[in-house]
Amino acid sequence: MKPAPFTYHRPANLAEALALLRAHGPAAKPIAGGQSLGPMLNMRLARPSHLVDLNDLIELDRVRVKENMLEIGALTRHHRLANAPEVQRSLPLLGAAAASIGHYAIRQRGTIGGSLAHADPAAQLPLIAVTLGATLVISGTAGAREVPASAFLQSIMTVDLRDGELITALRFPLPVGDLWAFEAFSRRHGDFALVSVALSFARDAEGKIIALRLGLGGVDTVPLRLPEIEARAQGRPADENTIRDLAAASAAAIAPEDSEQVPVVYRRELAETLVIRAFQSALNREKGA
Amino acid sequence: MTAPTHDPLTLSLSVNGETHEIRVPARKLLSDVLREDLALTGTHVGCEHGVCGACTILIDGRPARACLTFAAQMEGHEVTTVEAMGRPDALSVLQQALHEEHGLQCGFCTPGIVVTFEHYLRENPDPTAEEVRDVLSGNLCRCTGYQNIVAAVLKAAARMRGEAA
Image (tube, rainbow over all chains, first blue to last red):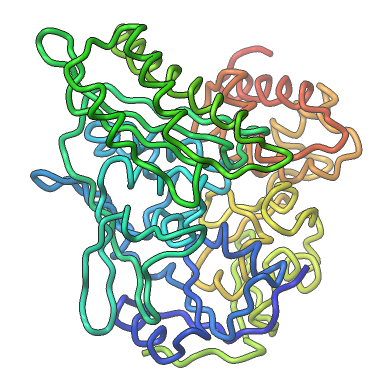
């Protein structure tokens, strides 16, 4: 399995990269970490005639907290996300999800921008971006635009990215609830999840759930945030009754694809179980702290 | 703007501290260049899509899949292969531990495992067995000799920390 021939370009900065992508249009493909594109090239599922290597665009490898957001450059690697002090402090949910991506060597190369652009419906970072209401910054030769992650991800491996455009950053709004969890189930360690759950919430002085954000991955063509479940939780205590009710409602709210290997009923039960587990691990972590 | 580089490319690659001038197609994978152009056959080629980990090398000191990397991308970067990690007459601490614990069976996956953990033990000198297993999940062993590999990594870690093991 060897890639089809291509012309290799190595732009030194963002302006050069955008000019190259514009000049070659749909014949060009950007490569960052290459952990998803590499296999597609090797198997010739992708046959671009121009490969534009983004790895020298070090200005896109950055993590910074502004007053009310965490901004992450598109070239930031998963391993750095998993370990960056800014992420640990402001958005530990993102760090935990990044730490579970693929395998150790994969995380050293794979980038957050690449993961969003690749748009696997079971991938970690698209789920976290949708659940936490992140915004993508997308640059083209004509300038930059901002798109909510939920609008950017359109379907399986289909995103709102026009010819000549690049994702340059992701912006996560802050603060988010101090209780959080990421849960995923896959057949083998490191595989894409059959179902994944991202959860973030806070509790008021009386212990009632406020500001819940709940998202499910692997259950549709894009990661889903569940606003009706979030509303249902508002003002209720985070006790077993509530958790079980929310989990059952979450399972009922999804319409996953049916397949022989993974029947709908199985994926629904998995979603229900993982939502329960996510609430429990969020609460347990609080107790442990 | 840098001029586009057409096939074939003339590259200057730094591998294990040595610089090599080679001429290869842009689409040639780093794993194939290491093996075929530089005769560094310790880097094994298994699945060629990033799953098996047999081709793991270090790029600027960090583990990476050589089969998901083009040699053309490595100009200006330092590549380290298993050949730099010990010799038959002078095994590294990790290699010695793999030998003692029978942490290799057919040996095909061993170079990738050595490269992965030579790096990982520098990053985390005192890992738990669970952490070792998590990292090892990125390196497939078709003989399924994982138990002994985990034991060997833990033994090597203890020795590197200066503890008797």
